[in-house]
Amino acid sequence: MKRLVDRRSGWRRVAITAWAGLALMSTATVAQAATLPKAEDWIELHSTHFHLISDAGLRKTEEIALDLEQFRLLLARLRPGSRLQAPVPMRVIVFKGRRSFRPYKQWRDESDNLLGFFLADQFGNRIAINAYPPSDGNSLPTVYHEFTHFFMRHNFAHLPLWVDEGVAEYYSSIDQPGGDLRVGVAIPRHIRWLREKSFIPLKEFFTIGESSAHYNENDKIGGFYAQSWALVHYLVHSEEVAESALAKLLDGLGAREGLEIALATALGYPLADLEGRLRRYVHQLKLKALVLDAKSVTAPKFISSRALSRSEALVVLGDLLAFTRAQPDFAEQHFRAALEEDPKSADGWAGLGNLARLDGRYGEAAEYLSRAVELGSPSAETYVWLADLLVGWSDSASREAVGGERRSLGPRARELLLKAREINPDFEEIHGLLAGSYFAQKERSPEAIAAMTSAVSAFPNRPELAYNLVVLHLRAQQFDEARRVIDERLRGDDGGELLRKAEEAIALTGRVERSNAELLRRAEEAVVRTDLIDRSNVAAQEGDLDLAADLLRQAIAVTSDPSLVTQLTVQLGPLEAAATRNRLVERFNQAVALLNVGDNDAAKEVLEELEPEVTELSLRNRIRALLDGLR
Image (tube, rainbow, N blue to C red; front, side, top):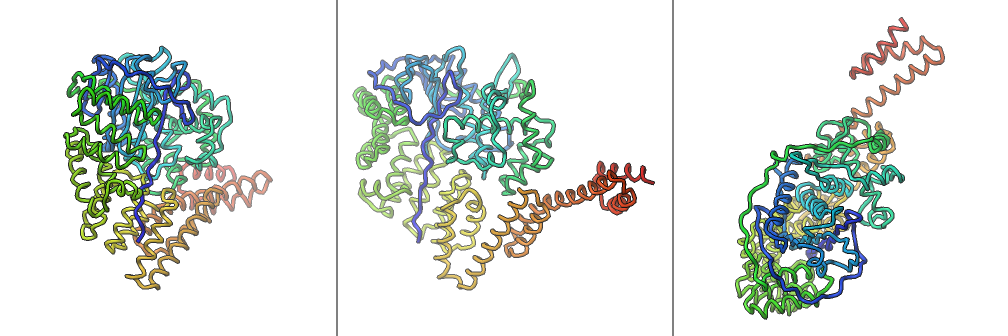
């Protein structure tokens, strides 16, 4: 039986500067540890959906909270009924100015250009911003950008990188002149890049992934972000594309139509025409923005606010330092000072535990976190951090450190996770850990499967969760369900190595329950079908739509799964329609060529044969006009 895995996405570290807008920093020098602050005048504010800690005063903190709440409502317009709640706890730390902010920055910032940063981890997110940036700076665009990422990855599956980044960039640019709210305002640095530097050819652009040079090298990433933003802006605002083009693209990608078909459907014209039209679009004198009446996006009111003690403020600041992973000693200094003032500070002990957990000191982490739990920590993260040490999916090092096997530690972890869910019902990461708490008890497979199914639903772009669900189905000998998860969640661009491992696990486990002949038949069918679909996609990209359609029909013919047949048939319809139109246009062009060389009789014969076959009004009218001139 294959071991379950936890392939956690690394920490996202995004920064805002006064000189470059959104920037990705990975090799900066961290700030030198400073002396502990007085930590006076800090407040905590809860709006309906955000938790803010601030020393910038109540009025300014309320203003920032309202901006965040309003932005959240804007995202809801992209897909009504979407899940807007962040899947993990999110804390916003607001600093009253450069002096207050400086000791807690991710890296040395001698010029004080850094306006804020966003840190995301599997179990929580931290946002730090300067409430009073320079006149030419704004602390919120990167917050908007990263919150959009959460929204997109929480609601849409199978997103190409350019869609994910393009939508996030589009929604990061908001202006509010007077009573209007302008969304998708043109971003000057992107416009300059696209007008002054070369485009990335779309054939290459569509293949860019997180390991590509265009996404990692400083002299190229600007072009990728600019072009991603421009294409999304074009889909939203251009009069050339179909109505609701962006929504159609997202729905098509979610239905696994493939990028070429989904994008062509959204555009309403052949994909081959897109590059030229996009180039012309970005050279327009003025690009539109979505203009809304600010009153139509009314944010909820605040729930509560209160002053923090110095001990509480030190814990919050130490927690931010722990999340940056830049100054662990300075973070520990904060937690120790907080505990000197209040030895029964559950969050102070939890902060020390998390710091030790991040540093791989699991036994020490478990001791501190257990102390925090005993003191009744009000934070759901405390219970999740300790449960992860007990039954985490990754490796056995943490369980060995706390002295136990997964089976014996499972009930304790489950108790912690249920407490965390009681504190924060929206903490979606709890589902995956709950499944882990049941894993060693085969008789509890239904509970494990239910929990992991919830995790997969909450995180549609996390293939490691889908793989774990496959393994749980196999342990329960639910082979059809395991295959369904593979086809729906892992097959395609998302799964990679995990797809190979999942299929291997099914093959190995299935030998016990299924005949070799049936397994071989299914495997051979999958190989043939995949080859035909791949060749069809290549043919479509090269413009041979007849061949692409024929290969897709062959793929349908060799497929025995009715649900897959339905999916492929849906993809075949637009492809056949496009191929038919191309053939008709080719024959029309043949007639025109005959006219151009004076062979009117032959041209008339071609047009008369063609006319009854054409249903498209514009092409039929052109045929009739030519025939009227020949008769």
